[in-house]
Length: 265
Ligand SMILES: [Fe+2]
Ligand SMILES: [Fe+2]
Image (cartoon, rainbow, N blue to C red; front, side, top):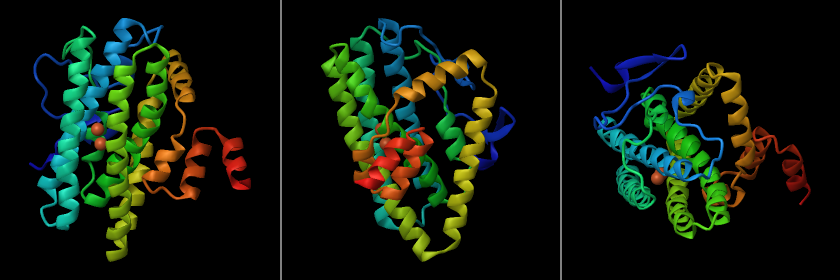
């Protein structure tokens, strides 16, 4: 049975089965089952941030590696980008695991979720996977890391802030090659655009379904968290999003006035 045929149902949406994890990890399916903290920078919450991020980076290795397995006929240069990405993601995992331990934590300390893997691998084309993982999830990671480095610095932890900045620099290159190759693949075959559009729609459905099942309390907390994340305009530009696309993202983040102000620049 192929990977994409091995399914689970979460929030009424059919997603891929979770990847293997060591027995020390407890895998959950809903965001509300992840650890939550009143004080987001208390010692335990800091360790949970490292732990959650570490598992997301493990997922990034697996998603890129699975693309290499599933699309052996992809252009060589694109396969090289994916291979380099897996190497970068390994370094990210190592850095986060080291920092987690330095903060007194250990792997398996908190629940983990593999949402990105489960959504991305539903797609049967490489362009669609790049659209979901590199152009959507990792682009969102750029926004998050841009915000988090300031948060860690504000509590005096420069070491974690520097680690996140090093990771961010790599993520920009992953998003950029995703953007470049989606364009190239679409220029070579117009049907690619349809695959990408359907992938983005599926991602919206999966996100909505995941949100729809959460408790009101959890939802309002998520909205507060979301409101604090700022669009990383500089790095979105570095990753070759167009100015129109950046405006659209600012509007999605509820930053209409900023989008309008940029138009007058
Ligand atoms: Fe990464
Ligand atoms: Fe990445």
